[in-house]
Image (cartoon, rainbow, N blue to C red):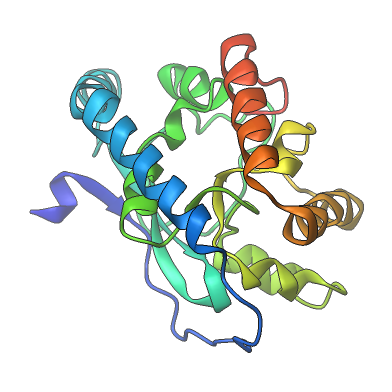
Length: 219
């Protein structure tokens, strides 16, 4: 029954855990996350997920939701929820979306440009896998490519976020080379060191602005 509803990527063969000597996040941040995610889930997701899921099924054969194994706090793998934005092709090798990617559907391109494809991740926040704001969770295959980068593992001392400082600074979407990843990592580590409720609120506001305007780096 699951296969008729979700596209689920294969679980990684192992789930290594790094040191837990640094706190995941403050209690106040978790309270904010739960309250905000619960508000969005009841007020928006209760009708938004069924409507968008129906549109996806009507415009592209396949399940409406895509689940990908990603890396979270202390490098534990979790199922990250997204609306499916590409043509259904189960069991295909991991590959980041690129500009003018033929795999992306017409509706999917709009969902990606406006960040609406990530709305189901508020459910990930409710169960504790993610935060509203934090370093974006990377696919486990992406981690294997960049794990040796100095400071990279420090991204996992906090919960990953639906949005983050890197994303509102324009570092969203494809990370095709080491230079781009270094830039993203710089902002991720700055957020981990200097994160606060005020910064979280500002990042949330800038994310909404980008959703309205459309993100030029989302494809």
